[in-house]
Image (cartoon, rainbow, N blue to C red; front, side, top):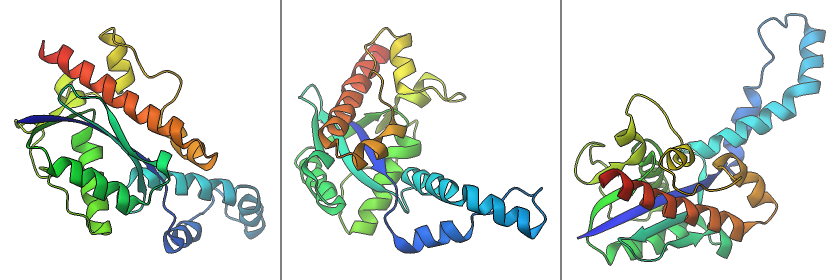
Length: 212
Protein backbone atom coordinates (compact mmCIF):
# COMPACT_ATOMS: atom_id res chain seq x y z
CA UNK A 1 0.00 0.00 0.00
CA UNK A 2 1.76 3.10 -1.28
CA UNK A 3 0.81 6.76 -1.62
CA UNK A 4 2.06 8.48 -4.76
CA UNK A 5 2.63 12.25 -4.66
CA UNK A 6 2.56 13.65 -8.19
CA UNK A 7 3.14 16.75 -10.30
CA UNK A 8 3.91 17.30 -13.98
CA UNK A 9 5.38 20.13 -16.05
CA UNK A 10 4.20 20.58 -19.62
CA UNK A 11 5.23 22.51 -22.72
CA UNK A 12 3.41 23.51 -25.92
CA UNK A 13 2.91 21.47 -29.07
CA UNK A 14 5.62 20.94 -31.64
CA UNK A 15 3.20 19.55 -34.24
CA UNK A 16 3.30 21.49 -37.50
CA UNK A 17 -0.32 20.73 -38.39
CA UNK A 18 -1.56 22.05 -35.03
CA UNK A 19 0.48 25.23 -35.43
CA UNK A 20 -0.83 25.64 -39.00
CA UNK A 21 -4.41 25.30 -37.75
CA UNK A 22 -3.78 27.89 -35.05
CA UNK A 23 -2.27 30.28 -37.60
CA UNK A 24 -5.26 29.96 -39.91
CA UNK A 25 -7.63 30.82 -37.08
CA UNK A 26 -5.86 34.05 -36.06
CA UNK A 27 -8.35 36.82 -36.76
CA UNK A 28 -8.68 40.46 -35.66
CA UNK A 29 -11.43 41.58 -33.26
CA UNK A 30 -14.90 41.88 -34.75
CA UNK A 31 -14.80 45.68 -34.93
CA UNK A 32 -12.22 45.50 -37.71
CA UNK A 33 -14.28 45.55 -40.92
CA UNK A 34 -12.27 47.25 -43.64
CA UNK A 35 -9.75 45.09 -45.53
CA UNK A 36 -6.97 47.62 -44.98
CA UNK A 37 -7.68 47.74 -41.22
CA UNK A 38 -7.71 43.96 -41.03
CA UNK A 39 -4.43 43.76 -42.95
CA UNK A 40 -2.86 46.36 -40.68
CA UNK A 41 -3.99 44.51 -37.55
CA UNK A 42 -2.69 41.19 -38.88
CA UNK A 43 0.67 42.73 -39.72
CA UNK A 44 1.02 44.15 -36.23
CA UNK A 45 -0.50 41.34 -34.14
CA UNK A 46 -0.70 37.98 -35.94
CA UNK A 47 2.67 36.58 -34.81
CA UNK A 48 2.16 37.58 -31.17
CA UNK A 49 -1.33 36.08 -31.17
CA UNK A 50 0.00 32.88 -32.72
CA UNK A 51 2.69 32.65 -30.05
CA UNK A 52 0.03 32.98 -27.35
CA UNK A 53 -2.14 30.32 -28.99
CA UNK A 54 0.81 27.92 -29.24
CA UNK A 55 1.73 28.57 -25.60
CA UNK A 56 -1.83 27.69 -24.55
CA UNK A 57 -1.53 24.19 -26.06
CA UNK A 58 0.80 23.32 -23.19
CA UNK A 59 -2.32 23.04 -21.04
CA UNK A 60 -4.03 20.56 -23.38
CA UNK A 61 -2.90 16.96 -23.23
CA UNK A 62 -4.09 16.34 -26.78
CA UNK A 63 -1.45 18.65 -28.19
CA UNK A 64 1.05 19.71 -25.52
CA UNK A 65 3.85 17.56 -24.13
CA UNK A 66 5.04 16.40 -20.73
CA UNK A 67 8.58 17.58 -20.13
CA UNK A 68 8.99 16.52 -16.50
CA UNK A 69 7.23 14.28 -13.98
CA UNK A 70 7.92 14.80 -10.30
CA UNK A 71 6.84 12.14 -7.85
CA UNK A 72 7.47 10.57 -4.48
CA UNK A 73 6.32 7.34 -2.83
CA UNK A 74 5.20 7.75 0.78
CA UNK A 75 8.00 9.52 2.68
CA UNK A 76 10.72 8.60 0.20
CA UNK A 77 12.79 11.33 -1.51
CA UNK A 78 11.20 13.19 -4.39
CA UNK A 79 12.26 11.99 -7.84
CA UNK A 80 12.01 13.66 -11.23
CA UNK A 81 12.20 12.17 -14.67
CA UNK A 82 12.36 14.31 -17.76
CA UNK A 83 13.62 17.56 -19.06
CA UNK A 84 16.89 17.85 -17.15
CA UNK A 85 18.02 14.67 -18.92
CA UNK A 86 16.62 15.93 -22.24
CA UNK A 87 14.60 12.74 -22.62
CA UNK A 88 11.84 12.16 -25.15
CA UNK A 89 8.29 12.23 -23.84
CA UNK A 90 7.89 8.52 -24.51
CA UNK A 91 10.98 7.75 -22.42
CA UNK A 92 9.78 10.02 -19.62
CA UNK A 93 6.45 8.19 -19.49
CA UNK A 94 8.04 4.75 -19.79
CA UNK A 95 10.50 5.39 -16.95
CA UNK A 96 7.70 6.73 -14.75
CA UNK A 97 5.49 3.74 -15.63
CA UNK A 98 8.25 1.33 -14.63
CA UNK A 99 8.63 2.98 -11.22
CA UNK A 100 4.88 2.98 -10.65
CA UNK A 101 4.61 -0.65 -11.69
CA UNK A 102 7.13 -1.63 -9.01
CA UNK A 103 4.85 -0.23 -6.29
CA UNK A 104 1.33 -1.02 -5.18
CA UNK A 105 -0.22 2.44 -5.49
CA UNK A 106 -3.33 2.80 -3.36
CA UNK A 107 -3.63 6.61 -3.34
CA UNK A 108 -2.48 9.46 -5.57
CA UNK A 109 -2.05 12.91 -4.04
CA UNK A 110 -1.60 16.14 -5.97
CA UNK A 111 -2.97 19.62 -6.53
CA UNK A 112 -5.60 19.75 -9.29
CA UNK A 113 -4.58 16.25 -10.38
CA UNK A 114 -8.20 15.31 -11.13
CA UNK A 115 -8.61 18.17 -13.58
CA UNK A 116 -5.11 18.40 -15.01
CA UNK A 117 -2.24 16.02 -14.18
CA UNK A 118 -4.00 12.66 -14.40
CA UNK A 119 -6.03 13.41 -17.57
CA UNK A 120 -2.90 14.86 -19.16
CA UNK A 121 -0.80 11.80 -18.34
CA UNK A 122 -3.58 9.51 -19.58
CA UNK A 123 -3.79 11.28 -22.95
CA UNK A 124 -0.04 11.48 -23.46
CA UNK A 125 0.47 7.85 -22.48
CA UNK A 126 -2.12 6.75 -25.06
CA UNK A 127 -0.54 8.94 -27.74
CA UNK A 128 2.95 7.67 -26.92
CA UNK A 129 1.86 4.04 -26.56
CA UNK A 130 2.97 3.67 -22.94
CA UNK A 131 0.84 1.74 -20.46
CA UNK A 132 0.82 3.29 -16.97
CA UNK A 133 -0.86 1.44 -14.13
CA UNK A 134 -2.73 4.30 -12.47
CA UNK A 135 -6.45 4.71 -11.65
CA UNK A 136 -7.17 7.33 -14.32
CA UNK A 137 -10.93 6.77 -14.07
CA UNK A 138 -11.13 7.06 -10.29
CA UNK A 139 -13.63 9.57 -8.89
CA UNK A 140 -12.12 12.74 -7.38
CA UNK A 141 -13.86 12.08 -4.07
CA UNK A 142 -12.97 8.41 -3.86
CA UNK A 143 -10.26 6.79 -1.78
CA UNK A 144 -7.80 6.45 -4.66
CA UNK A 145 -7.30 10.19 -5.26
CA UNK A 146 -6.69 13.06 -2.87
CA UNK A 147 -6.81 16.29 -4.84
CA UNK A 148 -5.67 18.98 -2.42
CA UNK A 149 -7.37 21.74 -4.42
CA UNK A 150 -10.77 20.05 -4.44
CA UNK A 151 -10.50 18.85 -0.86
CA UNK A 152 -9.73 22.39 0.29
CA UNK A 153 -12.66 23.99 -1.55
CA UNK A 154 -14.39 22.32 -4.49
CA UNK A 155 -16.11 25.57 -5.50
CA UNK A 156 -13.07 27.85 -5.72
CA UNK A 157 -9.73 27.60 -7.46
CA UNK A 158 -6.68 28.10 -5.28
CA UNK A 159 -3.10 27.58 -6.41
CA UNK A 160 -0.88 25.16 -4.54
CA UNK A 161 1.47 28.01 -3.67
CA UNK A 162 -1.31 30.12 -2.13
CA UNK A 163 -2.69 27.16 -0.23
CA UNK A 164 0.78 26.45 1.12
CA UNK A 165 1.06 30.04 2.31
CA UNK A 166 -2.35 29.84 4.00
CA UNK A 167 -1.13 26.76 5.84
CA UNK A 168 2.22 28.41 6.64
CA UNK A 169 4.16 25.94 4.50
CA UNK A 170 7.12 27.13 2.45
CA UNK A 171 5.95 27.98 -1.07
CA UNK A 172 7.82 27.55 -4.32
CA UNK A 173 9.40 30.94 -4.77
CA UNK A 174 9.20 33.13 -7.86
CA UNK A 175 8.56 30.46 -10.50
CA UNK A 176 5.15 29.34 -11.73
CA UNK A 177 3.97 26.98 -14.43
CA UNK A 178 3.51 29.73 -17.02
CA UNK A 179 7.29 30.27 -17.02
CA UNK A 180 8.26 26.66 -17.81
CA UNK A 181 8.16 27.03 -21.60
CA UNK A 182 10.46 30.06 -21.57
CA UNK A 183 12.79 28.22 -19.18
CA UNK A 184 12.78 25.20 -21.48
CA UNK A 185 13.65 27.34 -24.51
CA UNK A 186 16.56 28.86 -22.58
CA UNK A 187 17.84 25.39 -21.77
CA UNK A 188 17.15 25.67 -18.03
CA UNK A 189 16.33 21.98 -17.75
CA UNK A 190 17.60 21.38 -14.23
CA UNK A 191 15.73 24.44 -12.96
CA UNK A 192 12.48 22.98 -14.34
CA UNK A 193 13.18 19.65 -12.65
CA UNK A 194 13.94 21.40 -9.36
CA UNK A 195 10.73 23.41 -9.64
CA UNK A 196 8.72 20.26 -10.33
CA UNK A 197 10.33 18.45 -7.40
CA UNK A 198 9.54 21.36 -5.10
CA UNK A 199 5.88 21.17 -6.12
CA UNK A 200 5.82 17.53 -5.03
CA UNK A 201 7.49 18.39 -1.74
CA UNK A 202 4.96 21.15 -1.16
CA UNK A 203 1.88 19.06 -2.00
CA UNK A 204 3.05 16.31 0.34
CA UNK A 205 3.29 18.81 3.18
CA UNK A 206 -0.13 20.26 2.31
CA UNK A 207 -1.67 16.80 2.30
CA UNK A 208 -0.20 15.87 5.67
CA UNK A 209 -1.39 19.14 7.14
CA UNK A 210 -4.90 18.64 5.75
CA UNK A 211 -5.28 15.13 7.13
CA UNK A 212 -3.79 16.13 10.47
